[in-house]
Amino acid sequence: MTRFIHMLFSDMVALFFPRNCAICGKPLHRQEEILCTSCYYKLPFTGFHDKKENPVTEIFAGRLPLVYASALLFFNKGGMAQRLIHQLKYDGKREIGTFLGKLTGIALQSSPLFSDVDGIIPVPLHPEKEHQRGYNQSLLIAEAIAKQMKVPVFSDVLFRRKYTATQTKKSRYDRWQNVKDIFAVKNKNRIRDLHLLLVDDVITTGATLEACGSRLIEIPGVRLSIVSAAYAQ
Image (cartoon, rainbow, N blue to C red):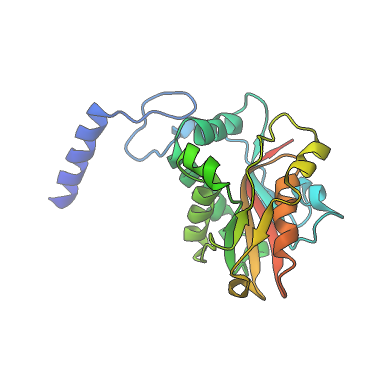
């Protein structure tokens, strides 16, 4: 009876507040989440979580000593990943961050490469930017990953010291210049001797993650891995 009442209530909510696929716009069935089944199976998964060496690890080779690195989806202009990330960052669709984080966490949980991760750190936003957006999209992704992997999120360790302009149209060098000195670490003893997973929404040049990671690895005993919801080819 309880299940029947719950299903009836869900159907009534869907009638007045229909849930639609974030890609194609078609109505979602009860068992579907964010994407319809057709769009889900068209997602451009990278499969990097099972590969010790992959295009993401190559980005940071010689720049940042990583244990492992991965990304869930390929990010192409006009593609599915770009459309999801755009809705997450600019349209207030925070549920997409949770969805992408859940999928990323499931992938990492199945990989022996990430089995000894001790905790997760999201790339921080400046408080002013977070206030404007209403949330930190990287934290939403990180929290969902952590839930799947059953490890803590350290959201009060890494912070952004100053507000910077968007990185979207900057060159690789300009991106690095824009972020190289803006991150700092507090509560350092909380992460000593841990294998940390640094999480962002999209990896392009890797400048932001490099700037964050370079601060984290200054803490004694820290080993660092990286993951993002998407990787821009």
